[in-house]
Amino acid sequence: MKCFVFPLTHANLFPLTTKPLNIFEPRYLQMVEESLSLKIPIALAYVPENGDTYRSIAGFGLPQVIDQRPNDNLLIFLPGQGKIRILNEDKSDPLKPYLIADCEIVLEDLTLDESLASKFTTLNALLVQWVQKHIPDAEQRDIFIRSLKGPQETVSAFAAYLIRDYDLQYEMMEIFNLNDQIRYLHRLYESNELTI
Image (cartoon, rainbow, N blue to C red):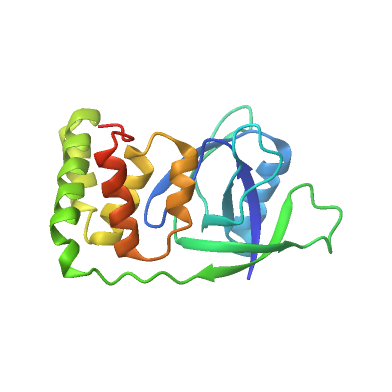
């Protein structure tokens, strides 16, 4: 599968979460336009701080334009449809000002092991606590909490909003088993690595 690659520091896109992005560079404005017209997803590829290249596991999705500003900047939402592995860059069109890559969808094991129910319940309660503390509008809080329909939604939202270290977030991106993700997040909680 082809993806347009949007490398960013301080950003990971987890499945079933949405990342708001302000697009202002001409090459990325073109990328968003072509993503929409050609239905080619954008892979939000994490670049470590002071790093020179992006990491191979990325969240991907088709952008939704929220606002086109008078200066032609775009505010978009990039909804996470899943994870992909960036295999190699496609250099067949050297005139494209942005990266295009061959990618494969990462299939995750999303079956919850019942022995982890108490850890999952703890994570869910911590996420709800975070939502109540950080989202002042009651209606928005309710919408957010209602969107947590299952373990994958909860785990992804937890990782996106409560892990403050982007390298640790990326480690979570590299875990493809829901039960291992729950164990990882619970260890972070126990080690005080979270924003609560």
